[in-house]
Length: 153
Length: 153
DNA sequence: GTTGAAATCCCAGGTCC
DNA sequence: GGACCTGGGATTTCAAC
Image (cartoon, helix red, strand yellow):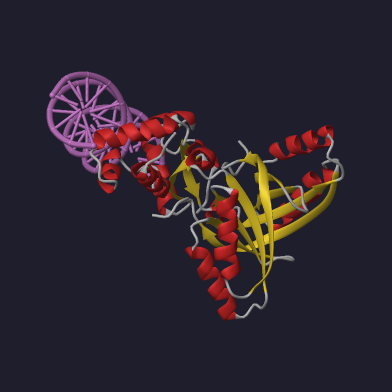
């Protein structure tokens, strides 16, 4: 799908506020309501906009700790990889997991309610997954930037 | 703010679909529409729900590459840190930036349209920031997991 | 104080220009 | 891309428990 300037503007606005009315949005992108809504539906149907989500404050939600866990596997045979990925997908504490190039194999983004919670998670969940060779955890001390907006205005 | 079982359910549902009607949501969490709406407003006013956002497919949006950049600073004096963080905040390619514990100082999540775009970004933007001592980039080959839902159902 | 119900208002979605 | 029209949901108020 080809995105023009107006589509980009619509996406930017909907990333900033996904619940604003079509009328408000139409005004911001200098369109009248009907064509604006048509474009939104097109973006949704094309899958450019996958959905809408509430943005939650993790602190106030009770999960103040964010950690990044870099994991290296012992071997990279099919069964080891599949077992590992299935285990990761089943852990609600793991918000994100990426397969990486470079020294580590996986990067996990984990949320925890407390240090005790984190310690239990690592001991009972991560260390129990077979085939894990190295684990390197870093805590996020501060989120310097959090932008859901992809492109420049 | 104290969150009970129903609040958690509301948040989970709104993370899955942030635009569903109050009526649909009320049914899912076994509440009548009025108290459901009142809880939503309370969650918003308390800042537990910070807002709503469209979820965009980065591939279809034209930014297929995700990279994680680990950066170490030469010194950690106030001016070096402030300069670095200000520079990062001004770069639209940087979607997220965390100050970390451990060997590296910062973890950046960067999106790029192409390898050329990434190369230009590193050369013209990141390497130009004063005080940067080490840079370690990993590409995301595959996103194994992406969950916006924080707690178990 | 918290829930269910009703009425008004405003927006979404469709259709035609 | 813009204008009109209709059905439905949101919002506010009120009554009830």
